[in-house]
Length: 239
Image (cartoon, rainbow, N blue to C red; front, side, top):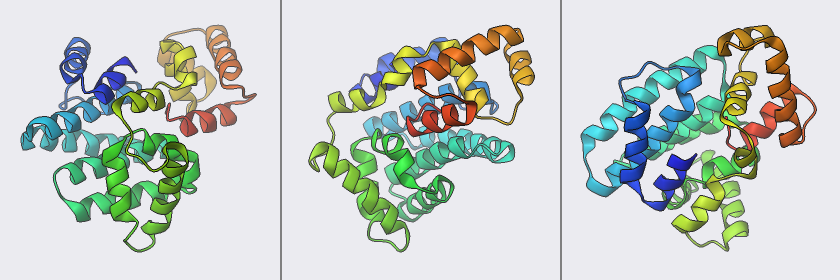
């Protein structure tokens, strides 16, 4: 989350230091436990491209996004697929590939169903997303989704392009501030098809420890069951 804040602030060298420290690379295999890091890294690469226009950077990012999309689709993780398709759209848009950008955005909305549940996820991307939404507003059925998101943007910000400081407020969500790193890992796995014991084995913890983490997650997200926790987390852009 700190790396995402730095990207939003334009502090790209600091975010790049994080990526090096974590050993995150576009050559990595797609892994659900590493997905949050990978999607953060893609955001960094898109921001770097906008700064220095090195096309090779986005070519590598595109390959990573394709692998992540395939893994998410195979696992039936609709929330992950929405975010991945959204980032594919932003990458195409940065390159000036308008048609591909709109196609990727449309694919994201197919999975979103009701885009109102993903307002924060989309609008947290700031001015590039607003620009893309304004282009999508003029195109076919996708225009309806774009208009709804732009109305949310106008209601929240008076229609103004979001400043980096305001984007930081959008990105550092209250839920994300109170959830520990381990609780975020548990939360992401709650969004999968794994059973409780399978999640415990995946994280190398006991079932009792997993239940404790899950109870804390429910309390912090103000929900009472796994399905509600996953829904709230997707609305907040946590998974």
